[in-house]
Length: 166
Figure: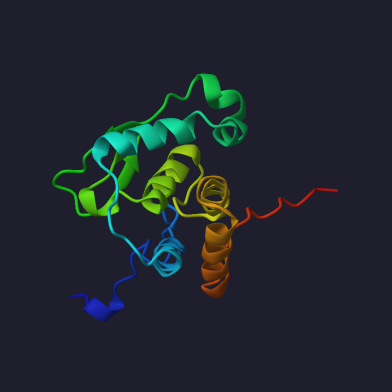
């Protein structure tokens, strides 16, 4: 008879496994910075106005610069009313904006997701694109406020430089 203590440990434990997804470590920091920078979240746009604003942003020279050669293959995202959702979301060419989120900052946040394919979702490249959109469409003061809040929370806003092999 074999005792339980004599058994060999399992070949793989949860500590040995590598994560299959990158963890979105900056997500809560980005949301906190956005709430602090833009505390007035009164929805001031109708769905038609949101669609018009998305079209204006998408056709801008800044979006063309961010997308680069992908511009021809990437179409303008569809906008849905976000009915039945608790949060605004961006997924595969569609942006869902519930009533509470129909503000410029939330719309620009979701458009930054549409412009950023790198993972994690709220990583440095996303933050860089988000800050650029805020600067262009909300002004320097709004960008400085958001940038200061991100800095205060230690949000990485620039992608790390890749090491050069010698």
